[in-house]
Length: 421
Ligand SMILES: Cc1ncc(C[n+]2csc(CCOP(=O)(O)OP(=O)(O)O)c2C)c(N)n1
Ligand SMILES: [Mg+2]
Image (cartoon, rainbow, N blue to C red; front, side, top):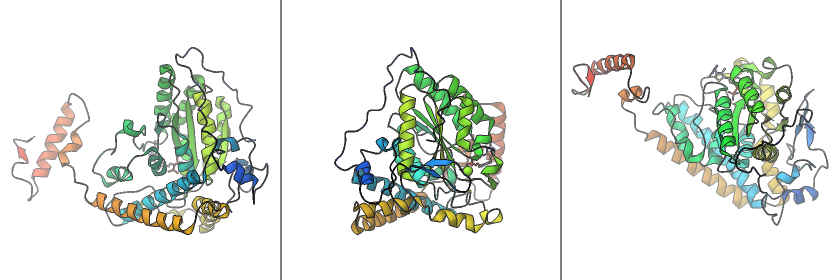
């Protein structure tokens, strides 16, 4: 039991208009993972595992070897998953990893300015992303490519900002997936405010705020935790503890395990194996269900690892040892679900081969779309700053227009009397 049950369980929200009900569970399917768990190669009643040397327990439903662990507490959240659902989770992770690898390559080829890879964090993102409902709202950091995938955002749209051709790239309200946020931790406040609004509307939607381990040291996150707790906001804080905030290890962020921070704010915190897609799905569903039911926020700490560099501008060999990375390779989220699918006879060679081909097609599409992205008009950088214009921006615009016009190949009509046409 890793839920901080000592934290004050806030009562149901009173008088908030609409009725908030628990998420309805899907009807029982022919073959459940709980049934699978009861069959061959399962471990009973041991879903809380040690995270590593001296680390506290974490919720785990699939071991790194792909064995299903029975959990009295969390099995019910994955009990209705069919073999098809499990293959779909596997596909999500494979497609996400392939997309991410293509983006890294595109950056290396000079097609993108920067890329923050999610390598190693696929299970945390797909598990939590697939736990959300369409009407839920998600506030990501800059690394949530797997969550974007689950929300239905076309992956090619994620690349525009990193190519420098736009300031975001997608309509946040199209998929209830907010724009990427680079200012560390600030999205937790946006999410909290949004969740307070959802509650005032009387809707039974929930909100998920993604954050990193480093973000937990930000004042914005402390404020978001405080406000969400006292206003009992339906928000789930999904923290991917990938062990590093650029070159700062988690030990430099906190003297207690991150999930325990929730206790001080009066809401529950859980540490989950972030490389176990089933556990991430189950724990996220638990947190979303209680948020919908008016029980307020929860903090999930998905214990995982950033297998790549912080971004393509970073060189992690300067601050961490290869052995550390290698120790996480054996916990790979994709390999462990594959082992489970194979052991259960839920997927055959043809499935894996088709998926491989499908992911290559995605890679090619991403490449083609990025290379064809039109460069924006340089003057467009001055758009969308103030609704009604601003003297300083006008001055800067004129200066920049003159600068652009000073190039030999500038179009003759680029400027007229210092004003942009
Ligand atoms: C307010 C603020 N301070 C500093 C930075 C620079 N910065 C960018 S990423 C990063 C580390 C974030 O680490 P973490 O929250 O663990 O997320 P991760 O990158 O590991 O996913 C920092 C300090 C920033 N973007 N915003
Ligand atoms: Mg981190």
